[in-house]
Length: 144
Image 1 (cartoon, one colour):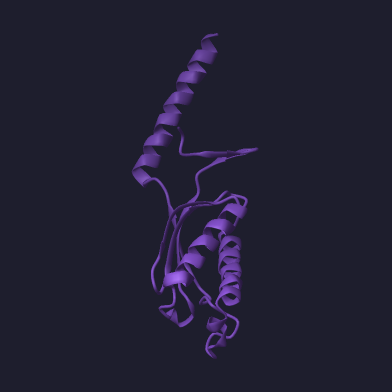
Image 2 (cartoon, one colour):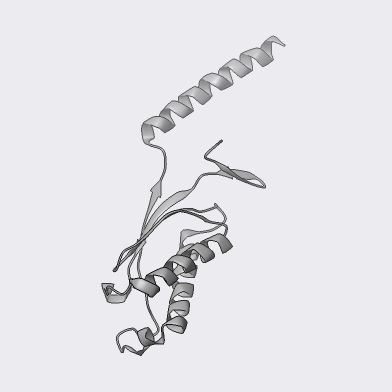
């Protein structure tokens, strides 16, 4: 089984490690709030066609390892996740919205994203192998 996934005109493997925090890095991601964030991330990722590989929610930040199809930008994914989870949290837990420092924002503005992929040496070997494979195929085609 290949690690690549297929769409109509593309095969892909785009995996990202994303970290973001609640506003002021308050330690509010516990208990029922944590469970709601976990469920919301699963649902909204699947709606965008993304696959959650790993999800770890700490009391003051979220770690997400996710496979994202090339047609979905990271900013779209995070805008959806942060915006829609905040709406769900404020609806389900109205006491969160009553605090004056939240305003209408649950998450801080930024996030950290890093690509996760094969190492450079493995890519060099793959490219080198592909070059040899193409030469062999050209020799076979030439002899025909």
